[in-house]
Length: 357
Image 1 (tube, rainbow, N blue to C red):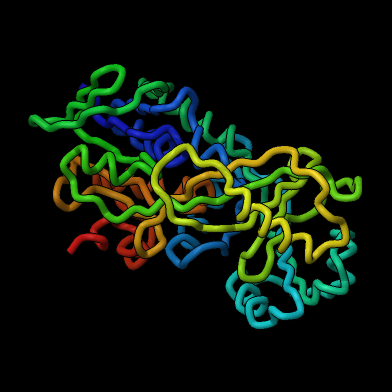
Image 2: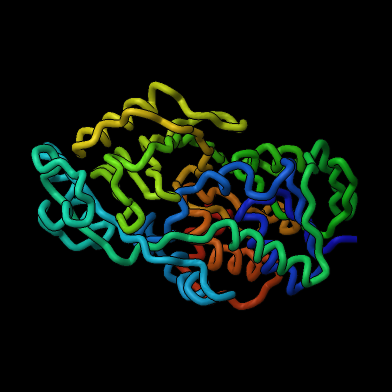
């Protein structure tokens, strides 16, 4: 008998499983051939403490020390630059306040990113407190913790049936029996709940597309900050000598293996191009991921009030990696009853209970 069976091998499931493995035997099952295949494998992989709604920011801050120092640390400096067009003064000011960034002149911005177009880019700000996350190593280290504590991490285990007979019985490629079931199925979280006879909480998967383009104008982009357009209408991030550009869309859809929408991608690239001097002449590859949101836009964590042996680790949205250390600890604390270190109001804003009548 497994103590904790976790459905979902992305960052939500692996981090929760790692925390719970200190309290019992854990098995994580993933439907795909590899861990982190869906949203976790298609992340922008940036840590910025002030990015997200208040409860997310609280998780970011609570988990920052872990990301900076655990296992040698997972963060490397990147920086974040906010860019506003001449018609976006209010959007720029709103983002400036939300992200707690430092305004700089366009000339200063161009010293960091020389392709910025001074004729169209009218406002700029910078934060040096933004970091790349080594997402693959973070995933693998959480999986390693589960195995080191006697647990298992299994791929190619697509769940086909869930029932309860005193304990949970889950059929996939193999059959599993567990005292507690952890739903970390991302875009499929509500489907897993329905299979288990638990009421869904209104998880909505939202598509976000991405394109990889060659380094603009042959520049060395290694030290460039990530750039984000005012109103989050596009962003661009250096990646292995190339540039990733996203239209930052949040199109509601159904759970599936997502792919980029060509028209949406073209519109996002056009918004990016408007702010720079180098046109996009070639897209090397593109893809999309599904970021999953609860109705109020923040994470849904902890035991379901209808059955405390069914635990949610869902609704990570675009915040999964940066919240993972603190969110997973909260899931474990709420599940096994250990003391919670977060502010009670923050916990109330994150518990799945808030989504029930």
